[in-house]
Image (cartoon, helix red, strand yellow):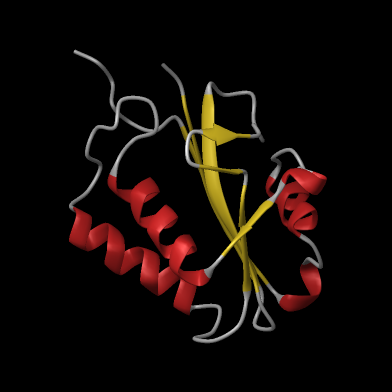
Length: 126
């Protein structure tokens, strides 16, 4: 039987003074800074992405948790950085991405706001 668990997860929340850029957040958690390869997305796109990452594994698309729970947790994470404003970035859109780890696949979300910064990143192997 295949092991359907995600290989690695990074979840970090930082104070406003700890990071000024997406690359700062990446360095703090130990993933590759992406420079101009970051893709900024809207708050709604950020919630959709995070819901997808919580709901299904990257490689096999195996269900990790029910969709309604993933959507609820994604909303709570994003709202923790304020209900308005904030900036959101990921390492790619759709099926194209810039790797930030040495794993086969990785995807994630970086949130930056006046309240602080946060990252939820997952990496998976085949």
